Length: 107
Length: 130
Image (cartoon, rainbow over all chains, first blue to last red; front, top):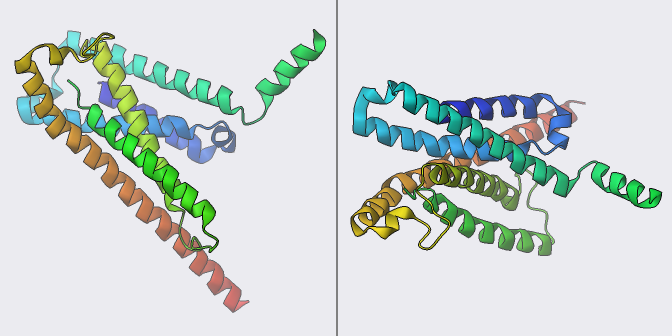
């Protein structure tokens, strides 16, 4: 489930990166790296588990599925936080810098 | 258990290589990147996937209690039998992860050069026809 959620996130961010120049300006590529890198790694993990347990890999228990879904959501949240921190540090449209300068000038 | 350490180690090495190549590209005068994207730029993609992927996997290991904030940081390292299993997983799954990400990056790098190459050919053909 974590693999599935991460792959969907990777596909969605790739489409967004491809179709929106604003998204590219906002450094969405960082999300692409994280999601595709993790998807490929979890794919290997999934293949290893499949070799170990066979078709049972595709029928996880409800408890495992819930936990993996929760993990998948947490992974997306973490990746988004990393992206936002990166965005604020890089500040491609100088918005943060301008806002801070305005605040400083006002005070 | 600790499979993410292998791609993370590869990421550390490729990051150092990328920095060195970037420096040498900046120092070299000749423009050898007519039909190709710079190697340092391509290595940036690999670094991104390796660091990003291993970072998220590290979080997953933390989630499952396989990483602890205290020495030796990997819970499997506390028990010799578990350590052997961990090392085996690093050698199999970890290496496979690093190889798969590198292979996908290799395909991407070759495809990107082909796209750039075909674009240049089309432009030169259009220029010759005009």
